[in-house]
Length: 255
Image 1 (cartoon, helix red, strand yellow):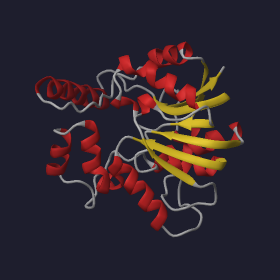
Image 2 (tube, rainbow, N blue to C red; image 1 turned 90 degrees about the vertical axis):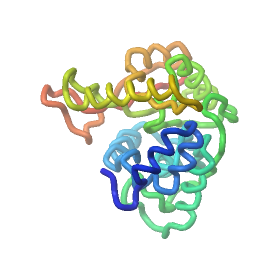
Image 3 (cartoon, rainbow, N blue to C red; image 1 turned 90 degrees about the horizontal axis):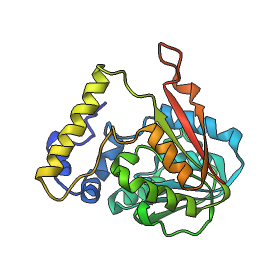
């Protein structure tokens, strides 16, 4: 939910009329107080799902923003963690928050506070051209895939795979699609339609779509880029009325 410390309607409007990168630079100082911040319960559920899959030495948060996934990685990796993002503003907030927060155990997986764990590197780069060799055991991402068009997704997955060691894992949560005709269904459809109209009429583009990351297509793209894939229910996020999980963790392992 929006908070009094979050961005104003005017600030969100200015962001929406900027490029994707510039928009996040503008939003960065208030991002963690906005509705776009990944909820703690999602981060905590992913953390718990990752613990049995370790141990992990080095972790990579792809499109890290202000460092939500960095907090998860510091709890499951023991050697080093890297956050990579193309927004200098988001990286600056993540770096500053981690440096200035009091030490001690995190209140949640999304806490920016330094936690007992490995040091963190903050790297500015485009996820479509990651500047890493095969150095990581684990890569993850939260809430970023809507910023990539479906045609860009195979190249993105190829970059992540190239950054992982043999047997390394690429993980991310996916929510169950909303029921056709539900309020959530129409909300996401309306948002994507508005973004398509905006990008057809205005430059620079701001790429953010909610309905282009379809799980069957994603699984196909992962397999085509050398991953073997399984889905793990995120039980901490509950179940739908039909008993199906509300969210799953995609676990893609380098073959």
